[in-house]
Length: 288
Image (cartoon, rainbow, N blue to C red):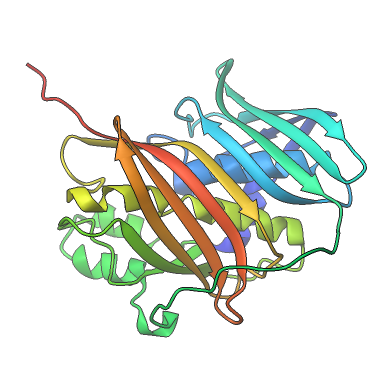
């Protein structure tokens, strides 16, 4: 699906004052719902109960795999409306059970101190091959059904520095850099800019932690899933521009990998957002 279709399908139906319903796009049908979709829709649900304030942070937990074949109900708790900050909690429910929850904080516009880390060096996005085009070349002899899946429109353009390594992974440093942006215009709504950026933020972060171990989601017996996700929005941005997603994994232990990401705008090097995520990463034991 293209970016405009993504924006349309992320929209929620209001069932009650604090209750909303969302769907999964048919084009994205898979075994479980993509985590970034639930983050984005939960943030949208929270925004539906907030006026004139902008999200500056969100923290969420993935509790159960989402079923792409049924709608999701989002229940918003109006935790607090303060003088400067507004807090919301969103619970996503399917089949009568929580699949995800999110806490988000919103702030009225305010001036203050300014500093940031410098954008790391990276090849320009024009010098890096599109991940999708690389994937198509690698899968040119795949069955027609697989090639049709690859040919579907994608809302987010991604270019991994050094190329993705899903097909033949080898141990490497737990770091990666990805250039990404929305493929089609999002528009001037700052809330939707945040929502689409949050949607995209879950796309590559989990893979950083497995790089030292020479495995990928294609490795037989390897199991991975996002467990939690946190995001801080530092500055407004236009996600139709190129952004560098600089990622590293400081630690893996106990069947979990911890990953950090910083998102920089290419045009001026501004740090617009930071992310942290812990994910499940384990090898399944063969059945006896």
